[in-house]
Structures are given as C-alpha cells and as structure tokens.
Image 1 (cartoon, rainbow, N blue to C red):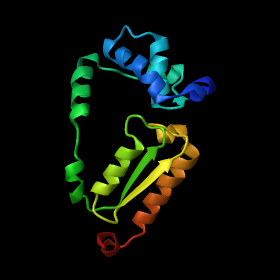
Image 2 (cartoon, helix red, strand yellow):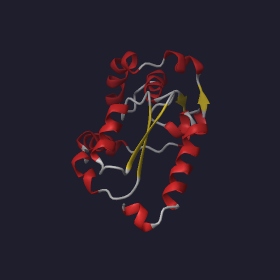
Image 3 (cartoon, rainbow, N blue to C red):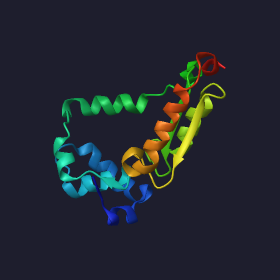
Length: 154
C-alpha cells in the first residue's frame, strides 16, 4: 500500500464527487487518471499496482450489485441485535459517513453499541490508520470475550 501525499493533501469528497460519479458508471473504459480520483474519494491510502492487479472484478454483476447496495437498509432491524457491537468509522468516510454510523449505534439496543471515529481515516480504516484500528479492534474483542454470558446479556 502506498500513501500518496499529493492525493492526501488534495483529498476532498466534495471536490472529487462530480468527477468520480460519471467515471464509476462508464465501466471498463475508465482511465487510470479517473480511477485515481475514485481511490482518492475513499481515502488517503491508495492501492499500489500489485494490489490493483490482484483485484478480481465481475462486470456482469456491477450494475445489480450497486442497485442492491443502494437499497440496503437494515436500520429498522438493528433493535434485535443482542451482542456488543463496535461501529468503527473514519472521520473522512464518504461511503458510510460519521452521521450514518451514529444512526447505526443509536438504532442498537441501549448499551451494546460502541462508536469509534478514527481521525484521518476514510472508508478503509484498517488501511488508513492501522496503528489505531487494529489495537482498537483487539481491545474490543478481548473485552467482549472476557465477559461472562450473564454480563453480556445485561
């Protein structure tokens, strides 16, 4: 993973959105420069050539997959979750913004949701700020795993 300092310094969802949206719908003829804008929108950590080459796409599923993602909303069903839940979001995330993450935690039963907003991170928090993300996740899993079943239900 490379971190492009010029991309990070110029990163702005608002500034890129108008250029990125048309690129995302055109399919395989999107240029490398246009893809670069798309990566900048999802965060400061840009995949390098090796990582990009390993990516496998399925153009036949893109349109249907995007349609399903746009319609995916389970907010009204989160009240049935009965286990501790970590919602971790990057402060710069344009895909699942901080406000949407707050809605998720608020829709969970009282006391089981934990919201963590990671400064300087975007959609891929584990890539953007791994030194903060991984210890946070390990702490959450460890603290939840240390609870007795009765404590977890309380």
